[in-house]
Length: 135
Image (cartoon, rainbow, N blue to C red; front, side, top):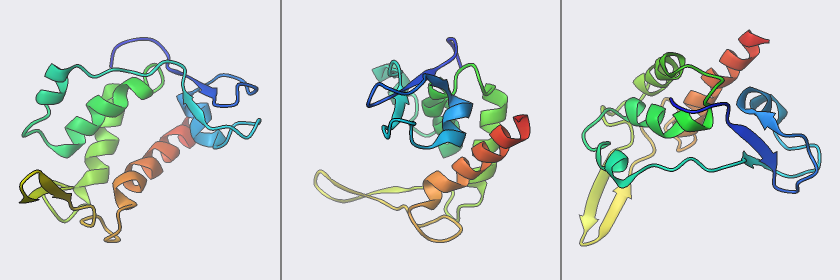
């Protein structure tokens, strides 16, 4: 994960700028806004093309990495992502199936509770544990 500390600002512009770990524990900004990155990381077309055939957790690390830059190491994020998605019942984690011409279906029900929320929550819970342990 390259770059410096990723900073987050409120969509309403009246709350302090925070880093990733503080945003994880804060939720909504004090001014009622949502925290978003001060600048949005970009993935090149070549990077995206390189995701083909790779394990879901590895892709997650590359996509999420720039959003946690400066606060989580790639090794820590990789360990958490690998643990989070190892609990899924399908080897592809969220398989993408073509069901017709130009029609695809992404299966989001292979997590431990069989609900779409597992895709996010399995990793978020580990990120929260990590942030709390650092405090």
